[in-house]
Length: 317
Image (cartoon, rainbow, N blue to C red; front, side):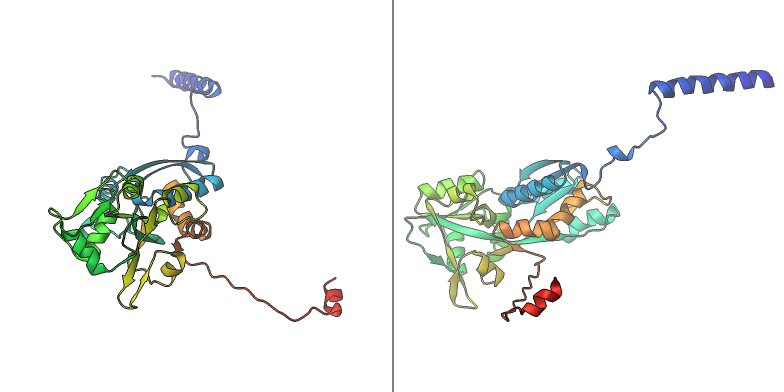
């Protein structure tokens, strides 16, 4: 090819490229900043244990109020299923009630992802009974006896056979084998409330955040027909319910932490949601829900009872 032909070919290519660029077929901006995910714009997929649904819904609602261009795909599954999903890279965030174990953390190590569990709130497992139940308080030993003894006269009702509620109680009572356990699995926390409202000889095991918000109509409706059972704190010799004061004072024996985990290393909606939930605004959401913020916000009030003199007022003016 002669030098003249090479120049002609190059000119024609530039002419075609210029035409396509003007028509919008070719763009020099391959990754526009406006379409990339940030904490303010984009989508995150979350898997959460169903017992944590109210607090997760509240945090998502608050996040979207601040960042309306974000969206969330949320699935509520048993806790271990949620953990398996993030290890399979099927979701970006999980909300569960424990840190990951060594085997699970190995996935992060292999993927060269820094494992950083984010404790968000102090929740509790609440025990509920029918309003007509003869129980008002229960000890940990009595709870274990009911769990393992089918002739105990009572039955424990859980939201799911693989839920965080069941896992927590098993760890608390040091129970490995549940094949012959005196337990019944309902279809979610809401179903547990319905079952207890119709049965006097059962104890429901639910996530406290379902009923902890005193200003929530759904929580208020769930509390009808049931009573919250107080659990004896052996070290104090007194029974406590999962109230805000008792959780804050660490007196309720069945307290538990809520953790958020992510595999995301970039700052997008997933990491933004976790930071938001553990920052001041998210912790206020936790407090509004009747739970205890993990990162307690210090409140300092300075009250001066001395009367303000007229001279000081003039100085301010």
